[in-house]
Image (cartoon, rainbow, N blue to C red; front, side, top):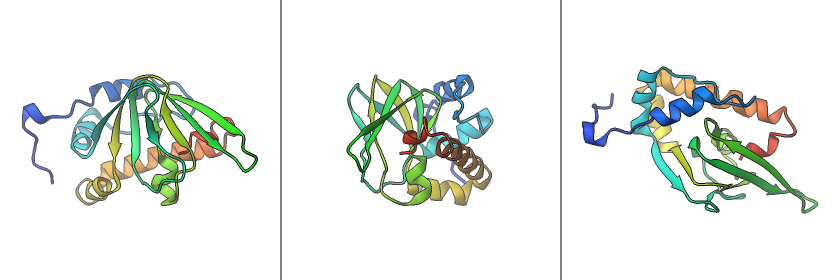
Length: 163
């Protein structure tokens, strides 16, 4: 089990929890954890800050990072076989990258910041550690991300958001 972090090193995920609780989108994360569980998960996450126009995920990259969006708006787009660009906008309180997280394949879309954003990244190595040390929390995160993936896959309008 992870030792408690010193107070000056604690990750403050309260803004993320608040965003998840208030997200009313159909494909929202639907807060899968208690506050205590979020605090246990926090040291496994890496904070990410994006400025407008920054790229978070690039179509074609192989990466299993799962992102939790605390604030801001992200634009998700990809080019299909006919060269058309499809767009989806995602807001605070949701998860991104679930397609690559589960599939272990290339990213299917590019995700860029439409505004300044604060996110929390769960990289594959830290997820494996989470599974080994906190399996109940890992399972809850996996089920919540899987739910979002299933909802987006079944909704043509939201399908592009599965980066």
